Image 1 (cartoon, protein in one colour):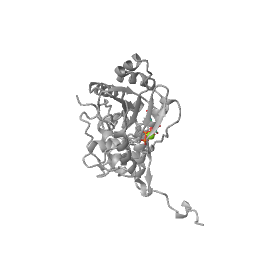
Image 2 (cartoon, rainbow, N blue to C red):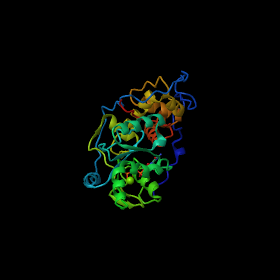
Image 3 (spheres, rainbow, N blue to C red):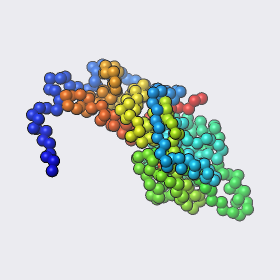
Image 4 (cartoon, helix red, strand yellow):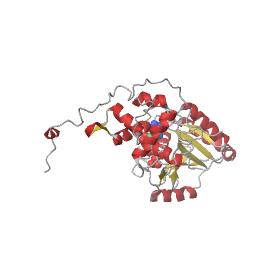
Length: 325
Ligand SMILES: Nc1nc2c(ncn2[C@@H]2O[C@H](COP(=O)(O)OP(=O)(O)OP(=O)(O)O)[C@@H](O)[C@H]2O)c(=O)[nH]1
Ligand SMILES: [Mg+2]
């Protein structure tokens, strides 16, 4: 049996007493927090992701892509993440597409409205939803009736009750299964906060429509801003990228675009610590008291916390891209 380590046996504190430590209740700089007005997310959606490339295309995605292409559905409902409705859209828009702007509870409401207008202008029907709490779900039937108005009235005139097939597609973790569960009033599809949970097509028969749940699918290669946004929002398994680098880039994005939210949650303001690598994560570590031996910042812990709190909406309602006009 291995003997449990007793910290006391080392006889020294976990950090160097003589080294100046940061007061976690104060910003890391003496400079006062400047009041900053909230800017809009970077207009062109470029989040400076030129150096990031992600490859995650497991076997079930290959099969799912094939199955989705072969499916004969009346409507393709694509469940996007309202925080990045372009990066998270995996479908070509046609007049039988229903774009679901899901996770709207986590996104900037004003920008979500812009995205709804954008997709409507492209010819799609749009539904804004929060599948965690059920907001917007009741409008699904109406949205279907609008998209299929002609077909449904034709069938009705012939005395036929037509049950439309709706395929629910989207990138991993966008909330497809949650949306289906809310819609069908039960826990019929498996849900988890990890991407890649649904592995195979599943049909759910409801009274007025048939829903087809599908596994989340990503492009084979992700790079630039799209890779970053999908990693930040949890669409990509976090073992396939450098979490620390991705988290630092998220911090940089928030520093540039949502400084008030970043400073309120982590007291991170300009100027940043003069560290060549990970200045934002360094500031967060000091301000939150995440220290390792020697009083050094625990960058890994700060990275995990920043990503986790962003994904959980704890930093604020944040959108990562706005539609181009
Ligand atoms: N805040 C918030 N969380 C949501 C919403 N919809 C889903 N979630 C959460 O997002 C996570 C993923 O949900 P799923 O329904 O499993 O997503 P999925 O698209 O089916 O994922 P895959 O099957 O892996 O492709 C879960 O933790 C859900 O609770 C939403 O509208 N708002
Ligand atoms: Mg699923």
